[in-house]
Length: 203
Image (cartoon, rainbow, N blue to C red; front, side, top):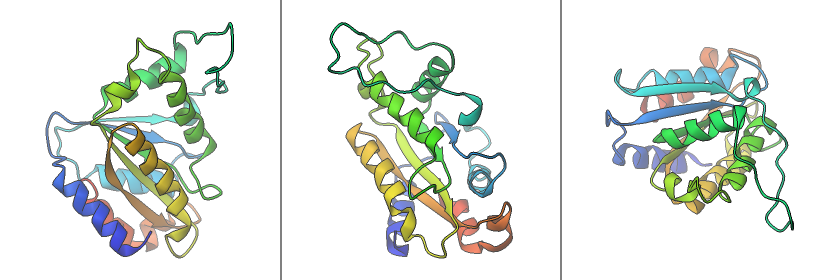
């Protein structure tokens, strides 16, 4: 993603008015380790939200999900009602107005835990009583990631996947924040540009 694309994302975020006290942010931590660069960047961005804005942080590695099964064209099998961690994540997803995917760049995409969570969106779409697509419409999706590359272009597939997912569900695309670092703490020590962008990400 170019600097111009990033500025457009930030401008769009500011236009959508995210200081609304009715907003609630769900931060979905997808890293394979705690307290990494991506989470640190997300917490810098979240610290700029008004104090009355609800925040919920869920670490996907602590909420393991069953393998996703595509049952759309399978005769004689139907989906069961979500339970356990799946129910918790479904309810948290539907309760939030803003979903923030916080995942490092792993092989040019989101982490496996993040991808599995989003694969379950496909299951929830086919539960009529959930009305997943209707209830996701109008929410805002954000992306926060870090890469060990010096430039942000390798993160384009990650950002594109999330942005396309938002468009498919009729969600708003809030924008993306991309940091640079390899060892834990690098983004806080040396990526001054990403830290500055974190202060304005949510408007």
